[in-house]
Image (tube, rainbow, N blue to C red; front, side, top):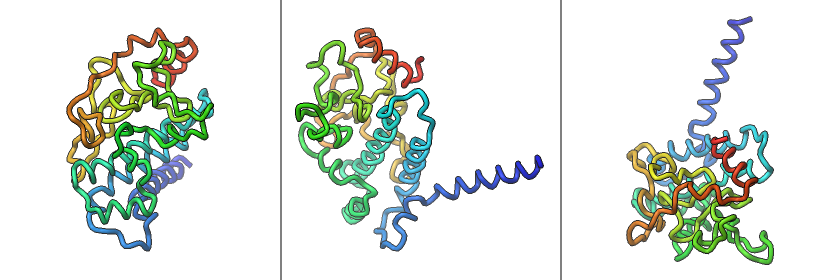
Length: 246
């Protein structure tokens, strides 16, 4: 029985590895994939695997919206990767980029927003969907940190888990998320996805640039976590739990 159990476990592990390899390519079966896809395929498959794990992860102890925060962040990271390799690093062709958008591998509307002033590090289209917010406004994460009350300064948005994605408030080339390390010694590689392979070459996209493509230098880093004690007590406790500090 023990040998049989080990065999079944081994088969399951192998199945999982095979199942997630070429996951994106399988979705595109029957389509003519433009040249250059091989260079980014492993990274896209990695995002698919992480997304699947995030959806299947235990949500015990989390509120309904909080269980989707990681999915929202992974969606941002995957599309930021595609944005960077096309617009910033010019490692893929326009034909391949348009193909990824057309086949819904890339979020075309979100990437398009990043090219507009004021939306360079927008976390999600949900953040600016006025129909989904009270009084036809936008998400809290779109309000600049300097304009917030002490109680709301580092409170994450209920829908996406984004703390701040207004121009100038981001870190490491992206928004400040609920689990972003804002301490003085924080490093880009610990807060953004590092992409391996020909398209990534081990570099972290957007490193040192919060502008999303056409920046004019580094922006000031928001203060470290020493403002946490100014948050509402209940919010601070939930943040500590979600960040693994509880």
